[in-house]
Amino acid sequence: MFQLNKTIVSEEILEKEFVCNLSACKGACCVDGDAGAPLDEAETKMLEEIYPKVKPFLRKEGIKAIEEQGTFVTGEDGEFETTLIEGKDCAYVIFDKQTALCGIEQAYNQGLIDWKKPVSCHLYPIRVKEYSDFAAVNYHKWHICSDACSLGKELEVPIYKFVKEALVRKFGIQWYEELEKVAQDLKK
Image (cartoon, rainbow, N blue to C red; front, side):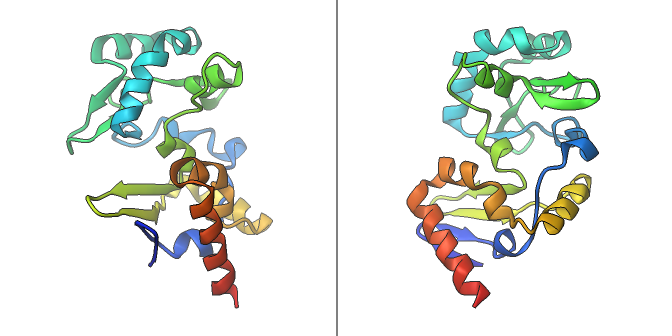
């Protein structure tokens, strides 16, 4: 672990490799698990705002879940998260044949909204836990991502490079450039 501004960062994000392999996992992270994607308070407001533009992209099961439970829910831990369909799939998940995709991201790709998706989804496999004085930035290892780890190793892409856009979105370009310097120093 090392400190970078107001973050405590796991060295694993510099050392481990990862590249999503949708052809292998079929987007399992959007349909497996026991909770929705973590959200911050600003994102809950964003979901409420964009829902009318995202709704046409969603499956009827997702629309039903959102209209019954809301555009987000409060999880068992008291944190905000995306709504689930019957405790399983994210309500915002759609399918391209067998592959799970994000309905929010589809609306973004069509130019209908300017918010790509929750930052926790964009950052994955990195998870950020906010504390009062700092944020912890950690690698979240999940067995369903073993193909992503293999592909990352084959392509020699460390986690922090794979999620560069999301890290810049979350912490800013200056933070990311400092992270790159730490990574270079560790290689020496």
